[in-house]
Amino acid sequence: MRVIVTRPRAQAGPLVERLEALGFDVVPCPLIEIERTSDEPIDCSGYEWLIVTSTNGADEIARRAVNIPKVAAVGPGTAEALRLHGIEPDFVPAVSSQDGLLAEFPKPAGKVLFAAAENARRGPIDALGADYVPLYRTVLLTPDPPDGDVVVLASGSAARAYAWIGGTAPAVSIGPETTKVAGSVGLTVAVEAASHDLDGLVAAVARFASEH
Image (cartoon, rainbow, N blue to C red; front, side, top):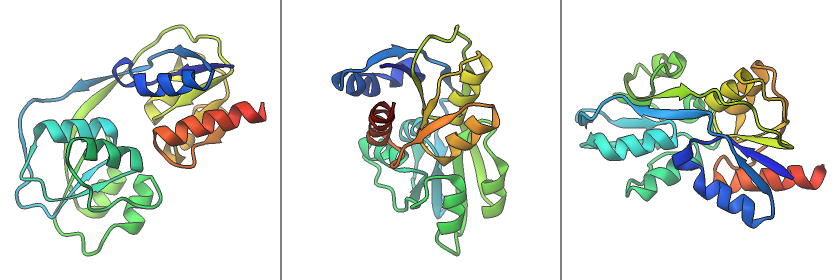
């Protein structure tokens, strides 16, 4: 079975290795690149909470943040990325989405810094009355879509990019936010990962293979 992996080239290695070890024919097809927005330090003094929404955000927080307060991580993948940098999250919502974060976030929240991608959704930021710092921007790539039996989508940006280049393979999605975006651009999500991290993606591809 041919599996299209759309993660950025610098981040695709662990997923590719895990899938190849299971016998899948993996086709790397990077659809996004991550560009840093700044090298300036991010001083978190005076904030009670810092919210980090992605693994890319975790990498940038580790690189740039100082005086880090309590940290909330959206999703186990983000939490694990923070831990790899020696930052232990204080809160990870059970539902791995920004809506799940809002529903479960400790109250009163106090002063919050929301650290995410450029052009992040304003809803959670406004709901928390948070300050916002853009950490990186996502650049969509436009290769020709490769042939494959299933495509792995680990972000909404990847879903948009895959649809943009005309990709039509059924998808394995990392979680509800990505599934929602994929559906909105006309893609078919065959399996959504039960845990929204690398282990979940690998298990979801294996489930797809067993059902097809």
